[in-house]
Image (cartoon, rainbow, N blue to C red; front, top):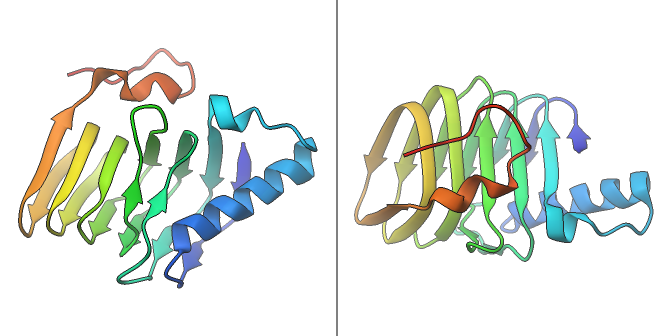
Length: 164
């Protein structure tokens, strides 16, 4: 697990990619040249809030599984994420809300905010996986959402798994 203390804000058009690159650098600083994250997933933990401010951002193309756990709120403003069934992106807020602003992304994974709300704002996006929250809100145009039961295969082993 790669740890980031406190709040993290990215104000660039490649904010999600910047966060992943920083996490990979920290991973290599800790474990040397090990590349197991390419197969088992890169686990990133942020102890505060996470906020992306890169409106009209460049889409991040996932080439390995990513599990992002944030203790507080997550604001994905203009941070389109393109992932696949082989390389899902799991985004989890322990105690806060998740807000996704922007459209046109193709996202496979999990949005998980069991103690908060998930708000999806934008147009022409596709989401495949699971969304778990106290409340789910959708604003804007067309967004396709489909369930995919294998989306949680990259989550850490636990007694709790997401089900339909």
